[in-house]
Image 1 (cartoon, rainbow, N blue to C red):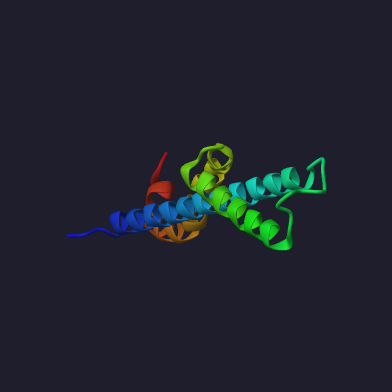
Image 2: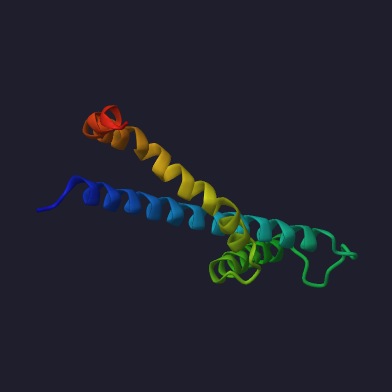
Length: 121
């Protein structure tokens, strides 16, 4: 026989894992955007405006190259910003999952535990 508690705890752990996966994906995206902005600032701060190969097409190619490089660095965790963000917010994800499921569990537990609470001396 399958009890309701194990089913709910399984669903809760699935929800928690899903939220953690979403957190990791968002952290990687943030790291990629942040890295892309750093690289753009680095390219914009060049000392000489007269580049031998300078053209709009070259600038566009470099932007695409920097964007792809930033995405790959974020996917591999080379810089580590995503890992730090996950560590920072992981506790909030683990705390929010039980709190969201507590009212449903408390309602069922309250009906089953009400006689125990009243009968305790």
